[in-house]
Image 1 (cartoon, rainbow, N blue to C red):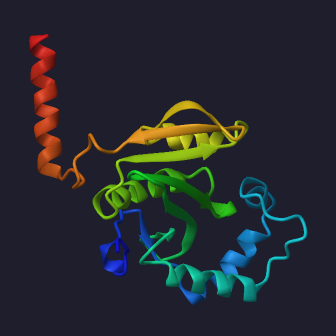
Image 2: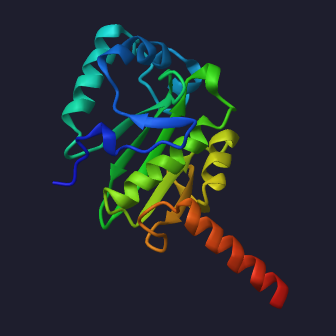
Length: 196
């Protein structure tokens, strides 16, 4: 069993943090489910009607899936805990995972999704033993494509008429770099620049 059961294990970056979804998020999820852009990107059934009851069931399902996956995380502002978006890690075969993400409309184009992808990638590598992450994006979703590329994903082809971005996590350290390590790498780069 590979699950994530302790919210304290979830990372943050000083601006946003990942948490589990809680019952108090149901109204925000209902509103998100009614957003036209969100519905288009996540292929909601045409006759789907967003409701509080549906959002409460979904949060309950996500809570029950924490041990097996898929793994759903809320993206929150560190300053006040406000729900800014969400992301999902869906484990595939052979240490591969699919990563998807969304942002609440009023917080789009503010770097929330990029931060969420970076944090979710840490979880995938360190806690779920993922070696390769895939992000599949509609060709006309330029913002989402930028998020993938900003986080070091490479566009490698198409899958089901969408652009497939991948990142090889097996070559990265398991622990995120700390300030001391960043200083060492910066000094090595400076020395190489002087020599070369």
